[in-house]
Length: 359
Image 1: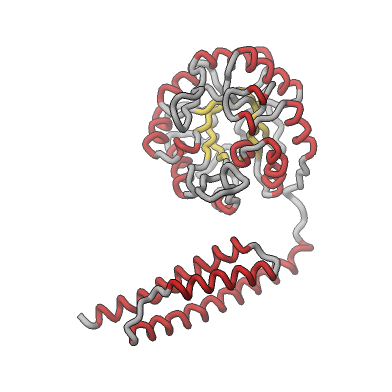
Image 2 (image 1 turned 180 degrees about the vertical axis):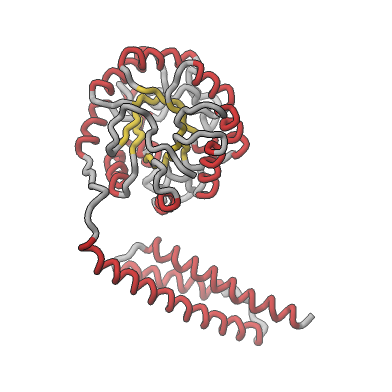
């Protein structure tokens, strides 16, 4: 896929590209007060939730199409671009009818290929920029699939929004960052603009700066941050919204490192990394050889492949070692789980081959 280098004309091509505005368009007064304040602070793209289906019915679910007239006024009086989330064919038609400049597809919608295809088919023949949030669950291929569906109908002004991933585990985050997933997306599609959504990722306004700085350090293209004229009175997600003044303070505090720094001084260190990686692969190969020998022993002595107690002991012991060595226990457990999965696969392969030979 080849993407257009410009999402919206007339905006200076520098990081971060910023989109901001309230979680929900609540009233015309609230929309205009927020938009004017943001425009006065240099923000060029105004976002607002028009359709807001919630996890459970009964809460505020957005004003709907009437709010699009308020966005028209924002464009007319501030000169800002406008952006809204769409989830259905009707949403797309309404947004286009009222001259919305940019669309985004939410995490729940991205997770549904039928819904994404409906939106794509509706947009066929248009040239509007579309941003696609990551799906709720950490599924990179599903995220890429949504991008491909839009690209296949002729949309080339595409971008991705990283808002984190849902998890049943308790965490300081509303949605776990799992940075390695958008990093892999950037590796596959270097020209794709990737925008971070620290509001939904952190779920708290005090986490927005930290997450925004991390995104900039990872060379993200931009930020989409929820801003409200009176966030404590917001009708939805008030804890993660900030005032335009706070937004300006956060943006001015970000350290934006140049992409084109020389790497000559890193060459020796990178060579060390390459050598260590090769050593790690050799060690993993040796470990798998031993695992296959264990698999053969289990086969000959009629033992089950999975020995749960032994596996639990390994995880506990290695996690403690990791902590003593200054590494995250969670990181090492993930490595061990993947290594164990491959060991089990290879031992099962031995069992399967033996079963075929005995038939």
